[in-house]
Image (cartoon, rainbow, N blue to C red; front, side):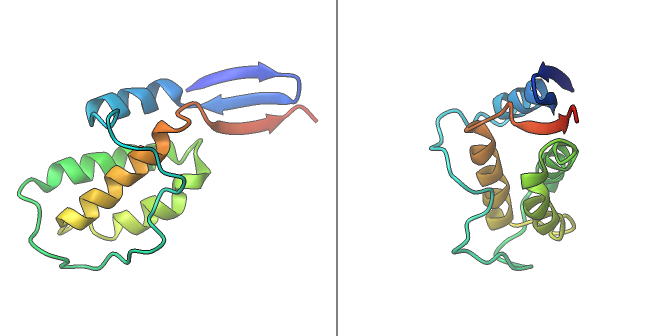
Length: 116
């Protein structure tokens, strides 16, 4: 975690962790998005064939869950994706990658702890 002192207080972020995760999943070539989940799509259980290696999806969702300590805007997306940890499908993995696309727009965003 990084802590920046500002006039208004302290900003706590996980920029380094976020950048490492973006590099690990190589989302630099994806277009950025304005919301963590696509509001027009509805994820469902058993939505196609399960992933051959669900560990990658679980690892990604676990990392996103860790980020919710300083990125409260990810909470609903992580809650939604966590419902599919047992039998993730490609649509679930695509939704998780969308969260990474969202993170790439501002990897240093964090929470402000007010000085007042």
